[in-house]
Image: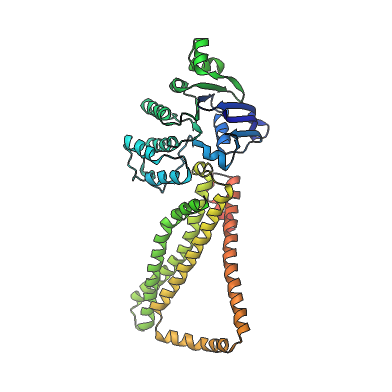
Length: 233
Length: 207
Protein backbone atom coordinates (compact mmCIF):
# COMPACT_ATOMS: atom_id res chain seq x y z
CA UNK A 1 0.00 0.00 0.00
CA UNK A 2 1.21 3.50 -0.84
CA UNK A 3 1.58 5.88 2.07
CA UNK A 4 1.82 8.86 -0.28
CA UNK A 5 0.16 9.49 -3.64
CA UNK A 6 0.56 12.69 -5.66
CA UNK A 7 -1.62 12.91 -8.77
CA UNK A 8 -1.14 15.58 -11.44
CA UNK A 9 0.23 17.97 -8.85
CA UNK A 10 0.95 21.51 -9.98
CA UNK A 11 2.13 24.56 -8.10
CA UNK A 12 3.51 27.90 -9.16
CA UNK A 13 4.48 31.02 -7.19
CA UNK A 14 4.35 33.33 -10.20
CA UNK A 15 2.02 33.18 -13.18
CA UNK A 16 3.54 31.17 -16.00
CA UNK A 17 6.46 29.88 -13.92
CA UNK A 18 5.46 26.49 -12.49
CA UNK A 19 7.60 25.02 -9.75
CA UNK A 20 5.77 21.71 -10.05
CA UNK A 21 3.84 20.70 -13.16
CA UNK A 22 1.61 17.61 -13.34
CA UNK A 23 3.79 15.68 -10.91
CA UNK A 24 2.82 12.07 -10.30
CA UNK A 25 4.54 10.31 -7.42
CA UNK A 26 3.83 7.25 -5.28
CA UNK A 27 5.75 6.32 -2.16
CA UNK A 28 5.17 2.84 -0.66
CA UNK A 29 5.13 2.25 3.08
CA UNK A 30 8.30 1.20 4.89
CA UNK A 31 10.84 2.89 2.61
CA UNK A 32 13.48 5.59 3.09
CA UNK A 33 13.26 7.68 -0.06
CA UNK A 34 15.72 10.34 -1.13
CA UNK A 35 14.10 13.25 -2.96
CA UNK A 36 17.16 14.54 -4.80
CA UNK A 37 17.52 17.48 -7.07
CA UNK A 38 19.35 20.75 -7.67
CA UNK A 39 18.54 23.92 -5.76
CA UNK A 40 15.20 25.43 -6.75
CA UNK A 41 13.77 22.35 -8.44
CA UNK A 42 10.75 22.12 -6.14
CA UNK A 43 11.81 19.62 -3.45
CA UNK A 44 10.85 21.87 -0.51
CA UNK A 45 7.69 22.99 -2.33
CA UNK A 46 6.60 19.38 -2.72
CA UNK A 47 7.34 18.70 0.96
CA UNK A 48 5.35 21.77 2.01
CA UNK A 49 2.41 20.72 -0.17
CA UNK A 50 2.37 17.26 1.42
CA UNK A 51 2.63 18.68 4.94
CA UNK A 52 -0.23 21.09 4.28
CA UNK A 53 1.73 24.34 4.47
CA UNK A 54 0.94 25.18 0.85
CA UNK A 55 -2.14 24.61 -1.31
CA UNK A 56 -1.62 23.08 -4.77
CA UNK A 57 -2.89 24.95 -7.80
CA UNK A 58 -4.27 21.66 -9.11
CA UNK A 59 -3.95 17.94 -8.50
CA UNK A 60 -4.42 15.74 -5.50
CA UNK A 61 -2.32 14.51 -2.59
CA UNK A 62 -3.30 11.54 -0.47
CA UNK A 63 -1.46 10.51 2.70
CA UNK A 64 -2.52 7.10 3.94
CA UNK A 65 -5.60 7.49 1.76
CA UNK A 66 -6.49 10.84 3.40
CA UNK A 67 -6.55 14.16 1.55
CA UNK A 68 -4.41 16.88 3.10
CA UNK A 69 -6.05 18.11 6.27
CA UNK A 70 -6.40 17.42 9.97
CA UNK A 71 -6.16 13.62 9.57
CA UNK A 72 -3.18 13.62 7.20
CA UNK A 73 -1.27 15.98 9.51
CA UNK A 74 -1.72 13.50 12.36
CA UNK A 75 0.08 10.89 10.18
CA UNK A 76 2.96 13.17 9.12
CA UNK A 77 6.04 14.14 11.13
CA UNK A 78 7.63 17.12 9.43
CA UNK A 79 11.12 18.53 9.92
CA UNK A 80 11.47 21.85 8.07
CA UNK A 81 14.77 23.35 7.00
CA UNK A 82 14.44 26.08 9.63
CA UNK A 83 13.74 26.11 13.37
CA UNK A 84 10.12 26.81 14.20
CA UNK A 85 9.94 26.93 18.00
CA UNK A 86 7.91 29.15 20.26
CA UNK A 87 11.00 30.85 21.67
CA UNK A 88 9.40 31.54 25.06
CA UNK A 89 9.27 27.83 25.90
CA UNK A 90 11.73 25.54 27.65
CA UNK A 91 12.80 22.25 26.04
CA UNK A 92 10.62 20.15 28.36
CA UNK A 93 7.63 22.42 27.71
CA UNK A 94 8.07 21.85 23.98
CA UNK A 95 8.21 18.10 24.60
CA UNK A 96 4.92 18.37 26.54
CA UNK A 97 3.49 20.47 23.70
CA UNK A 98 4.22 17.71 21.20
CA UNK A 99 2.87 15.08 23.59
CA UNK A 100 -0.43 16.97 23.88
CA UNK A 101 -0.98 17.51 20.16
CA UNK A 102 0.36 14.25 18.73
CA UNK A 103 -1.16 10.99 19.98
CA UNK A 104 1.78 9.01 18.50
CA UNK A 105 4.46 11.01 20.35
CA UNK A 106 6.82 8.92 22.54
CA UNK A 107 7.78 11.18 25.46
CA UNK A 108 10.19 8.67 27.01
CA UNK A 109 12.11 8.35 23.75
CA UNK A 110 12.32 12.14 23.44
CA UNK A 111 13.73 12.59 26.95
CA UNK A 112 16.15 9.70 26.40
CA UNK A 113 17.49 11.28 23.22
CA UNK A 114 17.80 14.65 24.96
CA UNK A 115 19.72 12.98 27.77
CA UNK A 116 22.00 11.15 25.30
CA UNK A 117 22.85 14.47 23.67
CA UNK A 118 23.39 16.24 26.97
CA UNK A 119 20.59 18.75 26.35
CA UNK A 120 19.09 20.09 29.58
CA UNK A 121 15.28 19.76 29.37
CA UNK A 122 14.93 22.81 31.61
CA UNK A 123 17.00 24.98 29.25
CA UNK A 124 15.20 27.86 27.54
CA UNK A 125 14.97 27.43 23.78
CA UNK A 126 16.16 30.96 23.06
CA UNK A 127 19.35 30.26 25.02
CA UNK A 128 20.31 27.25 22.86
CA UNK A 129 22.77 27.44 19.98
CA UNK A 130 21.51 27.00 16.41
CA UNK A 131 22.93 23.47 16.16
CA UNK A 132 21.37 22.42 19.46
CA UNK A 133 17.99 23.82 18.42
CA UNK A 134 18.17 21.77 15.23
CA UNK A 135 18.97 18.67 17.27
CA UNK A 136 16.02 19.32 19.60
CA UNK A 137 13.80 19.72 16.56
CA UNK A 138 15.06 16.45 15.08
CA UNK A 139 14.51 14.64 18.39
CA UNK A 140 10.91 15.88 18.57
CA UNK A 141 10.19 14.81 14.97
CA UNK A 142 11.80 11.38 15.32
CA UNK A 143 10.13 10.72 18.69
CA UNK A 144 6.81 10.34 16.91
CA UNK A 145 5.55 7.01 15.58
CA UNK A 146 4.29 8.66 12.42
CA UNK A 147 3.34 6.97 9.14
CA UNK A 148 5.29 9.45 7.02
CA UNK A 149 8.36 11.45 7.98
CA UNK A 150 9.20 14.49 5.85
CA UNK A 151 12.74 15.68 6.47
CA UNK A 152 13.60 18.80 4.51
CA UNK A 153 17.37 19.24 4.25
CA UNK A 154 18.04 17.65 7.65
CA UNK A 155 21.83 17.74 7.27
CA UNK A 156 22.33 21.05 5.49
CA UNK A 157 24.54 23.50 7.34
CA UNK A 158 25.86 21.03 9.95
CA UNK A 159 29.34 19.61 10.42
CA UNK A 160 30.19 16.07 9.14
CA UNK A 161 30.13 14.52 12.65
CA UNK A 162 26.69 16.00 13.31
CA UNK A 163 25.50 14.75 9.89
CA UNK A 164 26.46 11.21 10.84
CA UNK A 165 24.66 11.55 14.15
CA UNK A 166 21.52 12.93 12.51
CA UNK A 167 21.38 10.12 9.96
CA UNK A 168 21.92 7.44 12.61
CA UNK A 169 19.18 9.05 14.76
CA UNK A 170 16.82 9.00 11.80
CA UNK A 171 17.50 5.36 10.98
CA UNK A 172 17.42 4.06 14.54
CA UNK A 173 14.35 5.95 15.76
CA UNK A 174 11.81 5.95 12.98
CA UNK A 175 8.79 3.65 12.83
CA UNK A 176 9.91 0.78 10.50
CA UNK A 177 6.38 0.51 9.05
CA UNK A 178 6.55 4.15 8.09
CA UNK A 179 8.22 5.88 5.18
CA UNK A 180 10.76 8.67 5.29
CA UNK A 181 11.24 11.23 2.56
CA UNK A 182 14.56 13.05 2.84
CA UNK A 183 15.23 16.03 0.61
CA UNK A 184 18.85 16.98 0.19
CA UNK A 185 21.52 17.86 -2.29
CA UNK A 186 24.25 16.34 -0.07
CA UNK A 187 23.82 12.92 -1.65
CA UNK A 188 27.09 11.28 -0.63
CA UNK A 189 26.20 11.48 3.05
CA UNK A 190 22.60 10.35 2.62
CA UNK A 191 22.72 7.62 -0.03
CA UNK A 192 23.97 4.96 2.39
CA UNK A 193 20.61 5.05 4.27
CA UNK A 194 18.31 5.29 1.22
CA UNK A 195 16.12 2.44 -0.03
CA UNK A 196 14.72 4.35 -3.01
CA UNK A 197 15.51 7.60 -4.77
CA UNK A 198 13.76 10.16 -6.94
CA UNK A 199 15.68 12.61 -9.13
CA UNK A 200 13.55 15.74 -9.36
CA UNK A 201 14.31 18.34 -11.99
CA UNK A 202 13.06 21.89 -12.59
CA UNK A 203 9.32 22.10 -13.07
CA UNK A 204 8.89 19.03 -10.91
CA UNK A 205 9.89 16.57 -13.63
CA UNK A 206 11.01 13.17 -12.38
CA UNK A 207 14.10 12.32 -14.42
CA UNK A 208 14.89 9.04 -12.73
CA UNK A 209 13.64 6.99 -9.79
CA UNK A 210 13.87 3.52 -8.37
CA UNK A 211 15.68 1.32 -5.92
CA UNK A 212 19.02 2.84 -4.83
CA UNK A 213 20.88 -0.47 -4.52
CA UNK A 214 19.62 -1.65 -7.90
CA UNK A 215 20.62 1.62 -9.56
CA UNK A 216 24.13 1.35 -8.12
CA UNK A 217 24.46 -2.30 -9.20
CA UNK A 218 23.22 -1.68 -12.76
CA UNK A 219 25.26 1.46 -13.39
CA UNK A 220 28.32 0.63 -11.31
CA UNK A 221 28.16 4.15 -9.97
CA UNK A 222 27.10 5.77 -6.71
CA UNK A 223 23.91 7.81 -6.55
CA UNK A 224 26.06 10.91 -6.22
CA UNK A 225 27.82 10.09 -9.51
CA UNK A 226 24.51 9.32 -11.21
CA UNK A 227 23.13 12.63 -9.92
CA UNK A 228 26.08 14.56 -11.31
CA UNK A 229 25.61 12.86 -14.70
CA UNK A 230 21.90 13.57 -14.85
CA UNK A 231 22.12 17.17 -13.63
CA UNK A 232 25.34 18.14 -15.36
CA UNK A 233 25.48 21.91 -15.89
CA UNK B 1 -7.83 20.35 20.29
CA UNK B 2 -9.27 23.86 20.71
CA UNK B 3 -8.73 23.63 24.48
CA UNK B 4 -5.07 22.70 23.96
CA UNK B 5 -4.51 25.55 21.50
CA UNK B 6 -6.22 27.93 23.92
CA UNK B 7 -4.06 26.72 26.80
CA UNK B 8 -0.83 27.53 24.97
CA UNK B 9 -2.09 30.82 23.54
CA UNK B 10 -3.17 32.01 26.98
CA UNK B 11 0.10 30.79 28.50
CA UNK B 12 2.09 32.72 25.91
CA UNK B 13 0.18 35.99 26.40
CA UNK B 14 -0.24 35.89 30.17
CA UNK B 15 3.43 35.03 30.68
CA UNK B 16 4.15 38.76 30.28
CA UNK B 17 0.67 40.20 30.81
CA UNK B 18 0.53 39.49 34.53
CA UNK B 19 3.84 41.32 35.12
CA UNK B 20 2.40 44.39 33.40
CA UNK B 21 -0.84 44.03 35.38
CA UNK B 22 1.01 44.00 38.71
CA UNK B 23 3.07 47.00 37.62
CA UNK B 24 -0.12 48.82 36.68
CA UNK B 25 -1.67 48.09 40.09
CA UNK B 26 1.49 49.38 41.75
CA UNK B 27 1.39 52.54 39.64
CA UNK B 28 -2.27 53.12 40.52
CA UNK B 29 -1.40 52.83 44.23
CA UNK B 30 1.39 55.38 43.71
CA UNK B 31 -1.04 57.63 41.84
CA UNK B 32 -3.60 57.31 44.62
CA UNK B 33 -0.96 58.24 47.18
CA UNK B 34 -0.05 61.33 45.14
CA UNK B 35 -3.70 62.39 44.97
CA UNK B 36 -4.08 61.97 48.75
CA UNK B 37 -0.97 64.12 49.39
CA UNK B 38 -2.24 66.79 47.00
CA UNK B 39 -5.65 66.88 48.70
CA UNK B 40 -4.32 66.76 52.29
CA UNK B 41 -1.37 69.14 52.14
CA UNK B 42 -2.16 72.73 51.12
CA UNK B 43 1.34 74.17 51.48
CA UNK B 44 3.69 71.86 49.63
CA UNK B 45 7.15 73.00 48.49
CA UNK B 46 7.26 73.61 44.72
CA UNK B 47 9.77 70.83 44.03
CA UNK B 48 7.70 68.28 45.95
CA UNK B 49 4.57 69.44 44.13
CA UNK B 50 6.30 68.96 40.77
CA UNK B 51 7.47 65.48 41.79
CA UNK B 52 3.97 64.56 42.96
CA UNK B 53 2.39 65.76 39.72
CA UNK B 54 5.01 63.95 37.64
CA UNK B 55 4.47 60.74 39.62
CA UNK B 56 0.73 61.03 39.14
CA UNK B 57 1.19 61.68 35.43
CA UNK B 58 3.57 58.76 35.13
CA UNK B 59 1.16 56.43 36.91
CA UNK B 60 -1.71 57.44 34.59
CA UNK B 61 0.51 56.98 31.53
CA UNK B 62 1.60 53.61 32.92
CA UNK B 63 -2.00 52.45 33.24
CA UNK B 64 -2.74 53.54 29.67
CA UNK B 65 0.48 51.85 28.51
CA UNK B 66 -0.65 48.63 30.17
CA UNK B 67 -3.82 48.54 28.04
CA UNK B 68 -1.74 49.21 24.89
CA UNK B 69 0.72 46.50 25.92
CA UNK B 70 -2.14 44.00 26.08
CA UNK B 71 -2.92 44.74 22.42
CA UNK B 72 0.77 44.45 21.53
CA UNK B 73 1.06 41.03 23.21
CA UNK B 74 -1.97 39.78 21.27
CA UNK B 75 -0.70 41.25 18.00
CA UNK B 76 2.76 39.68 18.47
CA UNK B 77 1.27 36.29 19.34
CA UNK B 78 -0.97 36.28 16.25
CA UNK B 79 1.73 37.59 13.92
CA UNK B 80 4.48 35.24 15.13
CA UNK B 81 2.24 32.18 15.14
CA UNK B 82 0.92 32.72 11.63
CA UNK B 83 3.44 34.78 9.68
CA UNK B 84 6.89 33.84 10.95
CA UNK B 85 8.82 30.55 11.14
CA UNK B 86 6.55 29.50 14.04
CA UNK B 87 3.93 29.06 11.33
CA UNK B 88 5.72 25.86 10.28
CA UNK B 89 4.66 24.39 13.62
CA UNK B 90 1.23 26.07 13.77
CA UNK B 91 0.03 24.99 10.35
CA UNK B 92 1.30 21.41 10.60
CA UNK B 93 -0.54 20.69 13.85
CA UNK B 94 -3.36 18.15 13.41
CA UNK B 95 -6.07 20.74 14.03
CA UNK B 96 -8.64 22.52 11.88
CA UNK B 97 -7.72 25.99 10.58
CA UNK B 98 -10.87 27.35 12.16
CA UNK B 99 -9.67 26.09 15.54
CA UNK B 100 -6.39 27.99 15.14
CA UNK B 101 -8.30 31.23 14.51
CA UNK B 102 -10.92 30.59 17.20
CA UNK B 103 -8.21 29.98 19.76
CA UNK B 104 -6.58 33.31 18.94
CA UNK B 105 -9.95 35.07 19.02
CA UNK B 106 -10.97 33.65 22.40
CA UNK B 107 -7.52 34.50 23.79
CA UNK B 108 -7.93 38.09 22.63
CA UNK B 109 -11.40 38.45 24.14
CA UNK B 110 -10.35 36.96 27.47
CA UNK B 111 -7.20 39.08 27.62
CA UNK B 112 -9.09 42.30 26.89
CA UNK B 113 -11.73 41.44 29.51
CA UNK B 114 -8.97 40.83 32.07
CA UNK B 115 -7.27 44.07 31.03
CA UNK B 116 -10.51 46.00 31.46
CA UNK B 117 -10.98 44.45 34.91
CA UNK B 118 -7.45 45.42 35.97
CA UNK B 119 -7.95 49.01 34.74
CA UNK B 120 -11.22 49.20 36.68
CA UNK B 121 -9.38 47.95 39.79
CA UNK B 122 -6.61 50.52 39.10
CA UNK B 123 -9.15 53.36 39.15
CA UNK B 124 -10.77 51.93 42.29
CA UNK B 125 -7.38 51.72 44.05
CA UNK B 126 -6.57 55.31 43.04
CA UNK B 127 -9.86 56.54 44.43
CA UNK B 128 -9.68 54.40 47.55
CA UNK B 129 -6.21 55.69 48.46
CA UNK B 130 -6.45 59.17 47.00
CA UNK B 131 -9.93 60.40 47.78
CA UNK B 132 -10.81 61.44 51.30
CA UNK B 133 -14.19 61.06 53.10
CA UNK B 134 -15.51 64.39 51.83
CA UNK B 135 -15.16 63.20 48.21
CA UNK B 136 -17.33 60.14 48.87
CA UNK B 137 -19.86 62.24 50.83
CA UNK B 138 -20.19 64.68 47.92
CA UNK B 139 -20.41 61.80 45.41
CA UNK B 140 -23.19 60.14 47.42
CA UNK B 141 -25.01 63.46 47.74
CA UNK B 142 -24.78 63.98 43.94
CA UNK B 143 -26.04 60.47 43.24
CA UNK B 144 -28.76 60.33 45.93
CA UNK B 145 -31.57 61.75 43.68
CA UNK B 146 -30.80 58.99 41.16
CA UNK B 147 -30.92 56.31 43.87
CA UNK B 148 -34.24 57.71 45.19
CA UNK B 149 -35.77 57.59 41.70
CA UNK B 150 -34.55 54.04 41.18
CA UNK B 151 -36.01 52.89 44.50
CA UNK B 152 -39.39 54.43 43.64
CA UNK B 153 -39.36 53.05 40.09
CA UNK B 154 -41.75 50.19 39.16
CA UNK B 155 -40.51 46.62 38.57
CA UNK B 156 -40.89 47.04 34.81
CA UNK B 157 -38.36 49.87 34.87
CA UNK B 158 -35.91 47.64 36.72
CA UNK B 159 -36.42 44.87 34.15
CA UNK B 160 -35.92 47.42 31.37
CA UNK B 161 -32.74 48.65 33.05
CA UNK B 162 -31.41 45.12 33.48
CA UNK B 163 -32.09 44.34 29.81
CA UNK B 164 -30.15 47.46 28.81
CA UNK B 165 -27.34 46.41 31.10
CA UNK B 166 -27.18 42.94 29.56
CA UNK B 167 -27.32 44.40 26.04
CA UNK B 168 -24.50 46.77 26.94
CA UNK B 169 -22.34 43.87 28.15
CA UNK B 170 -23.12 41.86 25.02
CA UNK B 171 -22.27 44.89 22.90
CA UNK B 172 -18.98 45.25 24.81
CA UNK B 173 -18.02 41.64 24.13
CA UNK B 174 -19.15 41.81 20.47
CA UNK B 175 -17.23 45.03 19.86
CA UNK B 176 -14.19 43.36 21.40
CA UNK B 177 -14.61 40.39 19.04
CA UNK B 178 -15.04 42.60 15.99
CA UNK B 179 -12.06 44.80 16.83
CA UNK B 180 -9.97 41.64 17.32
CA UNK B 181 -11.09 40.26 13.96
CA UNK B 182 -10.32 43.62 12.39
CA UNK B 183 -6.82 43.55 13.91
CA UNK B 184 -6.30 40.04 12.49
CA UNK B 185 -7.51 41.19 9.08
CA UNK B 186 -5.12 44.19 9.13
CA UNK B 187 -2.17 41.98 10.08
CA UNK B 188 -3.06 39.47 7.36
CA UNK B 189 -3.63 42.13 4.72
CA UNK B 190 -0.38 43.95 5.53
CA UNK B 191 1.61 40.71 5.68
CA UNK B 192 0.33 39.65 2.27
CA UNK B 193 1.48 42.98 0.79
CA UNK B 194 4.95 42.91 2.25
CA UNK B 195 6.91 40.71 4.59
CA UNK B 196 9.66 43.26 5.11
CA UNK B 197 7.84 46.05 6.94
CA UNK B 198 6.91 44.70 10.36
CA UNK B 199 5.44 48.04 11.40
CA UNK B 200 2.94 48.04 8.55
CA UNK B 201 0.35 45.75 10.18
CA UNK B 202 -0.14 47.86 13.35
CA UNK B 203 -0.14 51.06 11.27
CA UNK B 204 -2.88 49.65 9.03
CA UNK B 205 -4.86 48.70 12.18
CA UNK B 206 -4.46 52.14 13.74
CA UNK B 207 -5.43 53.89 10.50
